[in-house]
Amino acid sequence: MAKRYQRVPELILGFDTETTGLSVSSERAISYGFCAYRFGVPVWSEQFFVIPDRPISAGAKRVHGLSVEDIEARRGSAFVFNVEKGLTRAVQILRDYHALGAYVVGSNVVRFDLEMLRRSCISVLGMELNDGYFDISLLRIIDVVDHDLAIDPSREFRPRRGQEYLCRHYGIKPGGHDALSDARAAVEVFLEQVVHNNAGQASLDLLSDPVDFVASFDSP
Image (cartoon, rainbow, N blue to C red; front, side, top):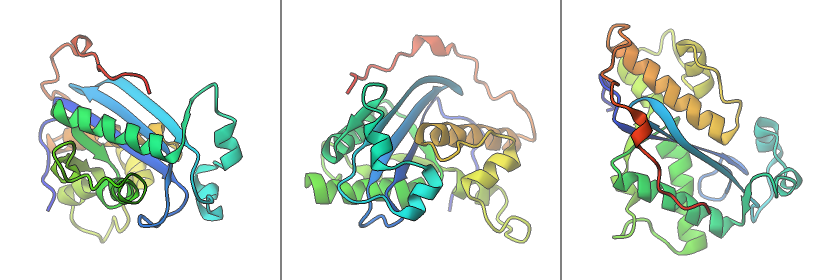
């Protein structure tokens, strides 16, 4: 069962993907969004796109609005990778931030985004993500949906708690099914959830200067 957080971890990595479809076992991520917050303040972000090795379903395209042609057209203005490079970059970011002590924050992030990443790495890269290089099971995870259930387990008045609902409930601008914007929205929801857990007090001891933190990640 998820715990109720009374304090914001020093380092948070927001994570979200947009995908070719909803099956974690057979679909692929077509965009990855990451954003780092230190002491509750954004300090770094990255978004990149992937040319998938399978079609984007009509249902998925209705949600995020991306076609393969749209992704191809982003070359020159954004990072656009093949599937292998996209998976490698995503694992590198997660691995490096985990080593820094970060908590990964997202919406349904374990059941969907990370599970699709894990299965794709097995099928595409031959990486189990359970070894000395990177063990995905060791990630520190805060799922804002599970956290909200810990805050208020009753489903009578809140039967569905997807990210769009949580954004409305906590007064956060929704990400609009853009991977980076959704990653940021998930972190902002979590910050508001912690304020709620502290009886509305905004003072969360976030007093250290975030400027001294510089993410030391090479550009892809």
